[in-house]
Length: 84
Image (tube, rainbow, N blue to C red; front, side):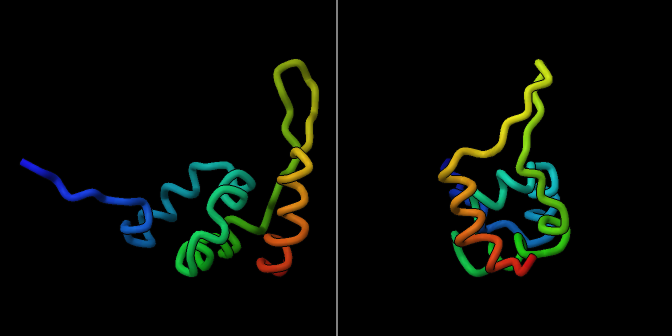
């Protein structure tokens, strides 16, 4: 018996919101922004864009920022489109 392949973008918006809320918003924006208009619309919701923390604190109390390619993409492509 074969089952149809279900992809992430086939899920209803409500389920995508639940899934996306469980993922770090910076990782989410960097990974999925630009896939298609529907995903972009969901990701531009203030739930995901009102607070972006680009710094990570590790167990040794070190704080690291994103790599240059990630920071560059945020500054040039993502932030201008989410208008924050």
